[in-house]
Length: 291
Image 1: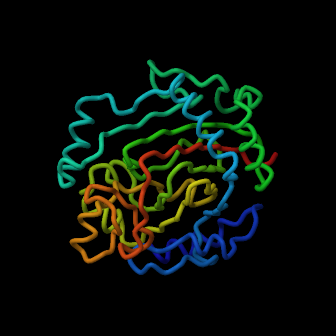
Image 2: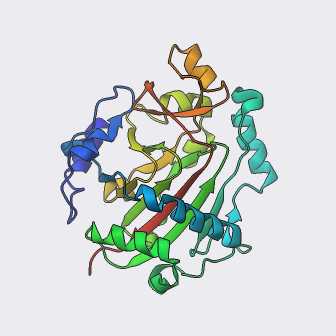
């Protein structure tokens, strides 16, 4: 995996800004906890404080309203629910409810409300609510991108942030920007993808990740992460189930005054736990390349 990342990093610059110390500080190799330098960066750029503290509430309120009006739950299939709950059995009574609410203009299933802004070649950015249009314009201004092709909103609660490692649909576009709101988390790049990332022992993943060569990105609330090149279309991205405060303490890691059932991410190593807030919203903007 390390040699793969080294070779990938050389081709991930493209027309975007060079990888810098901000990226390096927010990226770590799983296991060693070593920061990822520019030569081994697979195409991930980090923009802390992308959403100003003064506008975060407005953006979150807008996103919640859209989730309520157009959102579809992806946690309705009883068989899938049983499968996910079984994988969380080690958390006991403190296991959070499985929840996956999403709004998108991309057609995904027959009973899905389609977001009014549309998708792909037919996406109409003028139909985005002003807070989201402002973020889309800001993302485009800071990157070398073309037309906006997708806007997707994901809502999670009860600290259930699990996102099985996967690659987004190629038709979304080669530039994927993820804006995280309301809670810190860790986004992981992995060579492991579906179905293995879903079927894996989630307790093991929570404390070791999917693969020993995974790369963690620390995504504080209000941060934007831009994925391009291998980070976008070769490696999978996901968020681990989370490790409980009780398990951290059993392993000798300080979990502060968190209740035993509280969930944490970790950044590179378990010795750097990142506490989760109850709610997280992500807004995903996907762009074409220029021209």
